Amino acid sequence: MARHRGVYKPSKPEPYELSRTRIENFIKCPACFYLQQVKGVNFPSIPGFNLNEATDVLLKRDFDQYRGTGSSPPFLEANGLGHLTPYDDERFELWTQSLHFGAEGRFNTVHEETNLKVGGGLDDVWLNKETGQVHLVDYKSTSQKSPGKTITLDDWWKGAYKRQMDFYIWIMKRLGLNTSDTGYFLYCDGDRFTDETFLHTQDATMHFKITIIEYQSNLSWIEPTLCKIKRLLDAEICPKHAENCEYGQFLSACAET
Image (cartoon, rainbow, N blue to C red; front, side):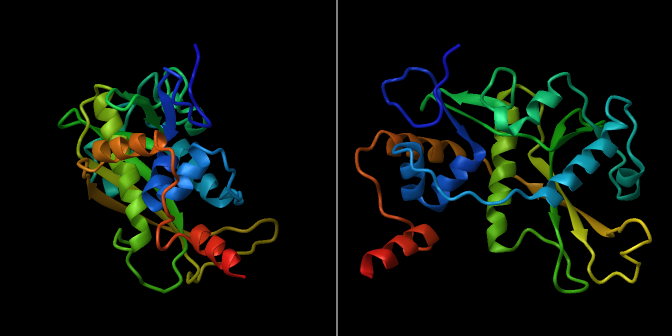
């Protein structure tokens, strides 16, 4: 089956595929989004977050031990969430494949008004045994530089984290699942202030503090944003860079030299 991805071609009838990351790019700077999606400009790459990926893999491995059993992991029990259990679905592994989000059976939906196929990759889903609803879960890793600081979602850059959760809850609802508006962020905080020994004779062990943050989603921004994206994709002129766009600032500085 033909697919429409990469550089946008208005003449192609297939739904145009946009990941959650590319939608966030639009929110940050419409000009950068336009240059990448319409003009095919490749932006500088950045190294992968291998340590963050490792914590994701280990968390999922631990939760997988309870997936499909109906039991709650001791971690959830100890944090007052014993009514939740890792959700089991034959599609779950496909839903985690963010690099292939647009393929058949992956975590995506087609927004009919704009003909955009949007999606991404899930970290985890927990089933509420009391309500029958599913809760989306996003794993995050960090290492706070101040001792005793409580992790919250209040930092300005975490607006993107919230929008990611909103977006995935919206997709899950469109897939027909009984989805709660409440999601959870599971934070692994590498403790640089611990008294525990890091370096051992043959290896090293990093201690992580774990925080669960409950989040009430806001889905009202999603469809208006998709409509704005479609209008921009069909536009003939690139918009101005956002005022705080570092790429735009760099290009302006280059033009002035």
